[in-house]
Amino acid sequence: MSTPILFKTCAQVRQTLLKKQEIALLDVREEDLFAQAHPLFAANLPLNRVTADARRRIPRLDTLIVVYDEGEGLAQPAAQTLQQLGYSQVHLLDGGLQGWRQAGGEVFQDVNVPSKAFGELVDAQRHTPMLSAQEVKALLDAQANVVVLDARRFDEYQTMNIPTSISVPGAELVLRAAALATDPGTRIIVNCAGRTRSIIGTQSLVNAGIANPVAALRNGTIGWTLAGQTLEHGAGRRATPVPESQRLTAAQQARTVADRAGVKRARLADVLRFRSETTRTSYCLDVRTPAEFSAGHLPGFASAPGGQLVQETDVTMPVRGARAVLADLDGVRANMTASWLAQMGWEVWVLDDLQATDFSETGQLPPPVPPSPHRYRRPYEGTDNPHEAMQAYLDWEYGLVAQLARDGTHGFKVL
Image (cartoon, rainbow, N blue to C red; front, side, top):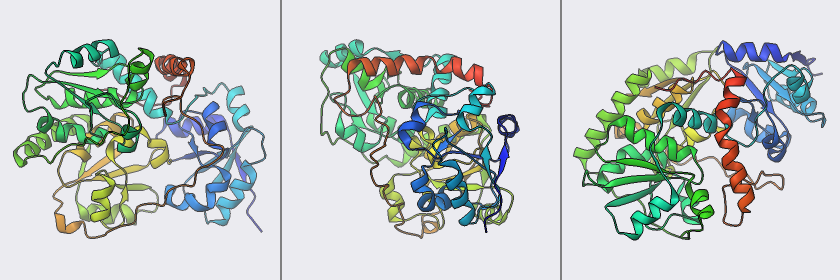
């Protein structure tokens, strides 16, 4: 017989978020419905994925979990399944999503909203340098001293990319930029599909103090398409190995940025201590590429390439208020990723003094999630989205800062 499932009010959930206490606020509808409206720090875990994914995404069994839907009858069975999996602090959100609205809670559209909203806040406060699609095309047409770096995942880059651009996923930028732009006069332009990853990538280079002039491609491949300009497809250009002297310089730059953001330092012995704690969740994450992770990683660590981790905090770390422990072997990617997570309100630690021999575990990439017929179609993916949908998406992104101000629970602090 299952334990009766209690309720948490919207006010109680908000108070937990404001106090930065651990909570997993789970929307158990399908992704397409989740993307239409949800609280800022809700994470999507559809009912049919609870059994497969809950233990990996919510590792501590006594985590405070609050489950909701919008009257579809999914929350109760999801909560019961979580109890059957061994979770002891499972609650239902009083009134569900409608109760959240009625209590004055802000709701957000799209997916990965905390990261996208944070990116807009960074741009608003730091005035990240940008160039329009027309300005970038003019530079390329004139064969100017410029290099375009695509900060998305490699598979996204292969689908469509700015002509001449090179794939350098976000966390790789500070590590690899100097090797791709050896002349300090070379202008570096960072792009993604829309705005967030190009803003964070460009600002990473600015924060690190790279000598080159840097700018984001305003509105990414969406802006390029809306300007009537042609994208490439199937490109395979990737960053080359980094000379040791440049790695050392990048590591010092990244460490300075991380220290300024309040990132904490740890060693392997601390990981054992973190894992022994029964009242805290620790996400132990390897921020290098999936190929590097598969070749060898720290025992018990999960693969979370840094650029995507900053973009998808709600997917990788659905327990808001948890601790993040990041690892790499170069001293750059973990520090740069951690600097952004710290500004997003996470308690984040970077492991120091790691040796190649510490990365003794191989394989163990998570299995791919089967495609869902209810997956949300992002307005910035693919090549066949209507221009009206692309423009509406950009307009929505511009409005996120105002929504953040109304929500009040975000805890972001841009340096």
